[in-house]
Image (tube, rainbow, N blue to C red):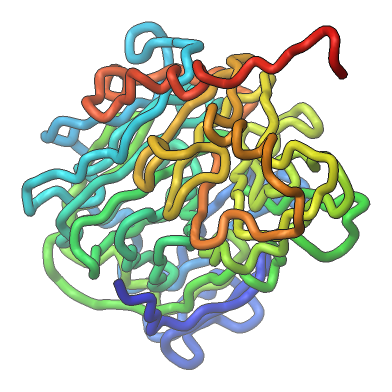
Length: 439
């Protein structure tokens, strides 16, 4: 698979960006002149309420050939959808059982695009109330043809696992490869092509607030995901009179509207509400260099904060390649019962706490207060090994969507043929070494 990227980007996180595909397309000194340069129309995309504090206010001004309002009425999408936006007893089921899925199947048909390949695994809350989150996967075989997608429900954090995503947005194009992520925020329209053929990945959707970099506290000014490594697209437009279909996710349901022009006719834009991508290989790892573990929150790439300080609607956490040097320490991830839900996926390689079974393209869910930890073989290896300095997680990349919410699962996820009903056996042969007569 190629990792080449022919597109240009602007660097930074949360910056006020400016980009124009034609010189002078951005108005000077004001946002909405009586007549915009090149006969364009000004249109604002608001990511926060007008009166949010300036430090948190997010919006972008587009200068486009057609106002986006030039479309026909939205109608219910006429294909079966496996997406959910309200997580209640009608649509989902709760379970505290540890759950693992083998790699999610990629369709064996040639005509499943990103939209039709989306399936909701589970979530919490209600998109209509802007409260909660959803976890989805995509498995698709075909590029989107004259179709654009957007979510009115929340921000999308997409994690490709197999195949690159060639994404066209109103802000410009992005190429996103496995081991990179992309965030496309509420209301932004985009299309996905698959240059490497059949593709699969994961998607986290947060219904409230936006993703931001975690506070570093005593770490200081540098470390973890550095702002300069985030990349935002530059303006690129197309001017066509072909029919397009805009598919909108609204309260968990899909609606479609037709229009007679490309949605990607933005010639220039400026603002701080824009999509971005990030290469996980750029994460500056912090870890214990003496003994014991630093909690996995130290591996947080992005967080969506809740109203409760220090508690997240969702954290995006990775377990990247790194050195391990702790002495007198059980080095694998410790046994745990957590007040947070933990959904894990594997992009490549083998997760350090599981010997087989947890495979690239698969997933696991450990619900709030449900016990979990390293499997039997990992425990045996860890208690017998010499504690020499060494490397861990080379040539692998696992991640976690962690949330304060209790997740409910869709019937599609619970009954999925890839569900591993023997997952519980991973812990059954952990050796019991207790001896009251020997310390």
